[in-house]
Amino acid sequence: MSVLGKVALVTGAANGIGRAIAERLLEDGARVVALDIEAEQVKALPAELGVSPDVIEPITGDVSRRADVQEAVTRAVRRTVSSPMMRTSTASRYGRPSRQ
Image (tube, helix red, strand yellow):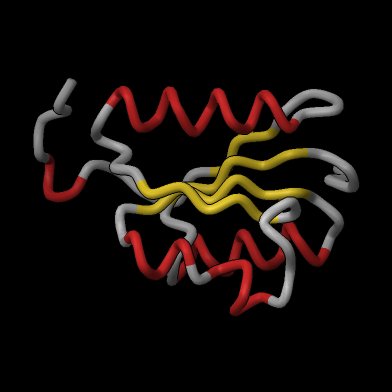
C-alpha cells in the first residue's frame, strides 16, 4: 500500500517503535500527525528529522485520554487530502483506566 500523499496519525511517535514508524512513513511520502505524552520530545521531532511542521505535526497527548485522542484525530482529518491512515504503537500505560 502506498502512503504517498496520505496523512498518518502515529501514537508514541517521540521515540522507540512509534518514532521509527513515523520516520518510515515520512520517507515513504506520508505526512504525519505525531502524538506522544512526552511533550518536549514530540515538539522536537520536526527539527530533529529536518522537516517542517507542515510535514510532521507534533501533538502532546495521552492515548488514555479520550479528548487527547479526539484532538489528534481531528487534526489528522483536517490535513487529509484522501482517506487518513492510523498507525498506533502504544497502549494505556500499565493497564491504567482511561481518563475522560
